[in-house]
Image 1: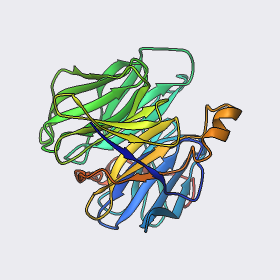
Image 2: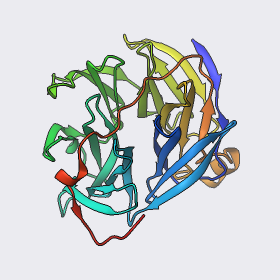
Image 3: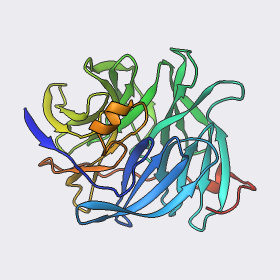
Length: 306
């Protein structure tokens, strides 16, 4: 097993940084602070990430992805919101029904440009969280309805397998996936993480799955057969997500959180909540932007410009 070490790469400390995405068309990085309700864009600047734009929301955000037309698709607290390239906001379908104390969580686009997003409970309920797919016509397809905390989502390099995380039981699921038709096979257990909790995930060109370990202070990679392969040590206990970034997709960007730490842990981990970068001797797989026309499924709102 190979061990790597990540280094701090952002000037700011986040409450809960999540959801990093590399936007190849503009050579920029997208990420969020869930608790502050902010979507960030930034650029790789030497060994760091320099923020260049913020889009703020009232309430939490769960995920954000680039759209093919230059806008952003955001899983806001309980619904989809599309932010156009010039800052107009359009409301989309509801993710969490009124009266249910849940919110949106991690999301990603499948190889055909559909957006898949999960939910997590904000109360003590367990077992009823969902994994949803926003179809090209605006319909929502439920892929799972029995999760404890839906989290990271990724696809194999050839797009025929979909990985999805249920954090609290420590399970990463896998299922067959047909991006062209939207066909999804039955899920089966791929990994069970016992030391820490699996959070965000991504894949590399070898088909290795990289898993952020919340509570473990590291990222772990696994072969396509689920065998442990690499470890990236991170100087923050709550590692939340991962993505390959850079024009060659050869650097691993790692998000972390500063929340849920006591005073002693804050002193021990002063960089908790920052972004980190690591050189891990492999390259990532290009991600897909949201490919649906927003005007077909979204409507104008009065929320103003970003």
